Image 1 (cartoon, chains in turn blue, brown):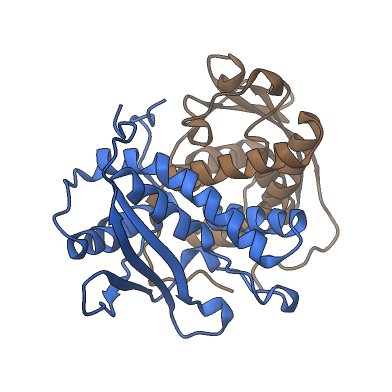
Image 2 (cartoon, one colour; image 1 turned 180 degrees about the vertical axis):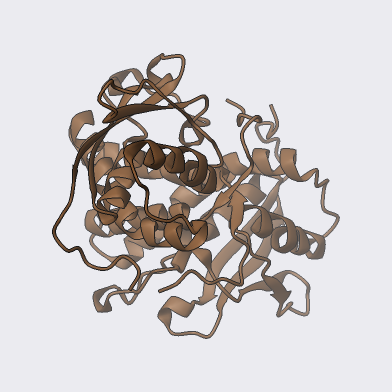
Amino acid sequence: RCPQTERAASTNSELFTLTYGALVTQLCKDYENDEEVNKQLDKMGYNIGVRLIEDFLARSSVGRCHDFRETADVIAKVAFKMYLGITPSVTNWSPAGDEFSLILESNPLVDFVELPDNHSNLVYSSLLCGVLRGALEMVQMAVDVRFAQDTLRGDNVTEIRMKFIKRIEENLPAGDE
Amino acid sequence: RCPQTERAASTNSELFTLTYGALVTQLCKDYENDEEVNKQLDKMGYNIGVRLIEDFLARSSVGRCHDFRETADVIAKVAFKMYLGITPSVTNWSPAGDEFSLILESNPLVDFVELPDNHSNLVYSSLLCGVLRGALEMVQMAVDVRFAQDTLRGDNVTEIRMKFIKRIEENLPAGDE
């Protein structure tokens, strides 16, 4: 069940980008409206995040983060770099330090993509929100994640807004079994 | 329409692997039987291959192949390496030189995957067949691609069998417009 370590760890992302596009297209066929597609993508992302965290902790050798600022840095500089080949900037901290934004100058998931007019409510990259939510839940952080800006919808940058909700106290299934 | 060149070209493949798993799972929900899922995956792969070839030619600087043996080598050593981080071996040539096998010691698409008993006819990685078929069609080669062995189904290796059908003579839409 472990990733096979003998194979090369990195690949070009275009095949991923196009496969993700096929997934979104399929969901748009399956569900009646964009909101439902967004929800499904987020849910799939959550299930992916819950499993991906194990791979991330193994590869990155990142230890426990001491505060949300450190978490933000690890997400931007290690996790995004590792899985999407980009390093978003971390900005727009709330005064309380419980909310920040990841600004993506470019979003590899949307290469080649144009939203059709009849999908104006589609949050195309919703999977990423779910991945972040699921992965962080496995290290006992409950977070809210949403797209605040999206180049696909005409914004200049893509902005993912993350809000710390609470530390999860109960015992979780071990993430590294 | 071009990939944004400023971003890093390589990423870890686990996010891709898990996203592909979400796509297959969704199709298994959508279609009645495994054969139909295989067909859909192949079709999606075809559409991906038709677009991916452009990225491949741009990145690889590979020129026109002079024969099917050269094509086989480029697929194994350049394309698989670039997009999946593995280098299959090329073997089992037919005497006429029109068929060969790609042997994958490991298949990144199936990391983490176990086929449930009720999906014994699922050819999980069918997308790859479609990608190869679509990409080669854009460089005017009609090929037949299928899985001959699959570790997911208990075989020792994964074997993709490729058969040259014909050179496509008619003018195709330019692949690099």
